[in-house]
Length: 262
Length: 358
Image: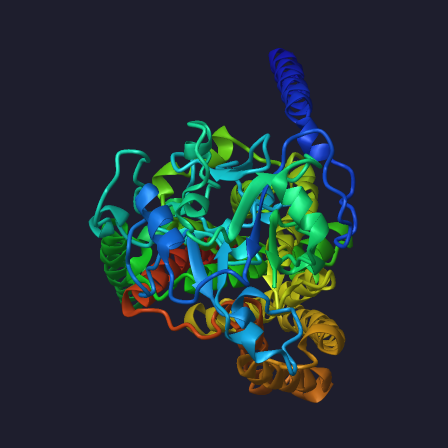
């Protein structure tokens, strides 16, 4: 008799606990609004997202001088980017590459020699539909209200799933302690630790001080134009409307915020 | 029941000591990696996932293999699998533990692992994968232990075990799917992975899992004399054949879309062994032969190991010695857990049959 009562008591308590867990998990699944976005527009859709600011950059590759590295030096100095040169541990926020590396899906057959021999700047595309922010398990890589794709170095667990998801190879990992390879440290921006990822932040640290991105400021040829892609009167939009431009791998549907004039 | 693992022959203890030595080597290598960073591995900017991730992908498939035995046994009352069910659950638990350890070993900041739970992101397949792996580890241990405990007391398994077993099916499918999607969202050959990658990953897991179970059963027979029954082995071989054929059919369909232009050499090698093994399995006379069956099973496991993990990850990359040592260490931890669990299982089963024969 006693046993029977104990049995039903345990049964009922168990059910109660299960019900609580069920209710709790129900609360947990109140998914944030951002995760319920509508199906993405086709990759070739060029309509900018209305409402918010979407910061972007236009690079006029015709003006970029082949042997000039002023933008890279300025950026890497401003953000304490370690210099492991071209070893396997290299960390870069902005770099110069070949046409084939930057536009691998463009046509390379019988391409104009001047175009294939030019060097092309590559940095984070701050995609409107960024794969890296979707795959990050902790939200350490996230999209800001102004379209900048940023990284929280203190939350990153170093799983590198963002690196694997980025179709442009724009994210670097600190394979070893970066502080040993910073030659002229600056106090303007924090250094990182071993074991986390980092990349271009569109100089969000400088934007709050009303300064232009370091690379834009450093360029003597005005190769780069920085501005709000959602503002039809911005310089970048005016240039986009009057020039033929390309994005990197547009067919993937990531909607890069970086445009190139070839 | 765990005390059964403490009594064994000299051979058993030699094996345990050997595993411990490998684990110690692995751990000292890992301490190097923790100190100097992942720079000690062969991975770099272009190849940001390497050997660890490859092992993980393969082992998730093995972790799921228990389902192909437990499902017919519990849902269709297929009694021939009675002796192999517990073994398959213990294999699943060991494989899942190895998966989790490989995820940890691959992390730049393993000390921050709990951030995954503190800031869960429903977008992220990594998050779901870690949840599924942890649940699968506990569930397969609970099922295996529960069934074995009941067997030892010679009673029917407790009734609460049934819902747990049923829960394990969607969980296993979920774990495989999530792992496949985790790779499916990565740009590959300048495209996203084809959607057919996901079902292919599932069937290839079942094929390699069934093959590995057959191999494990044969090893157990040789080392302990424990016999799972020839019917169970034959049925598993049939399952491996079906899964293997489906796998290669799906790979074939992939060829006409993505791989058509330039298949990777490693994959060609993997395809050849895989197709050869499936061909052997397709012939009933060879499938039941004691020589051809283990060879074909081993071939299928290697083929899928190359194709699922290594093939996707290890183009133009060679892991360092330290990385290989850590990998071996983690395998040794998994094999140690499996050895202990199987030792308990085989001893308990031996005692029962001994009593019955008296």
